[in-house]
Image (cartoon, rainbow, N blue to C red; front, side, top):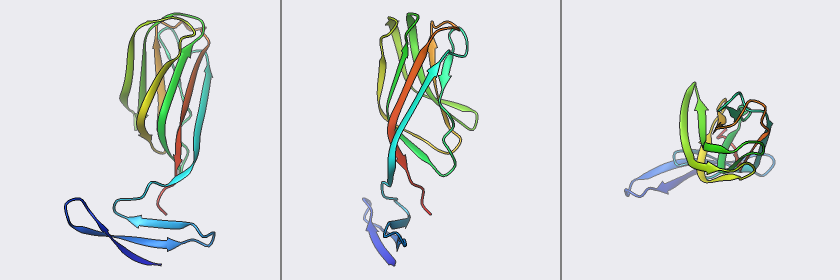
Length: 150
């Protein structure tokens, strides 16, 4: 379709390539990608934690998807907790982005709001310190499904 100059904050220009797909969707490639919404991210994980003081983990981000997470809610409906830690696992490395340490009565939901991005193969692990192996725990993850440049 053509190229369009993109003005950057530092005064320099970059070029983006614009293409129109057969389904009339605009594709932009090059530097400084546009926010590209593909759908609503809605992940629900429920069950027993991995063990005492254990965790629940999301499925891995599927190939071709990017997750823009804006809300994560965690709850242990069986046992009082002392801490909840939310981390993204990427290539075997843990990146923690939220931690609540306080007395958390059972059924209290701990909510995180912000922006965290996950790419193909990443998982979200919510560790619940104080939980027991047989507890019933829940994690809700919401946000955006993003398209990848093609």
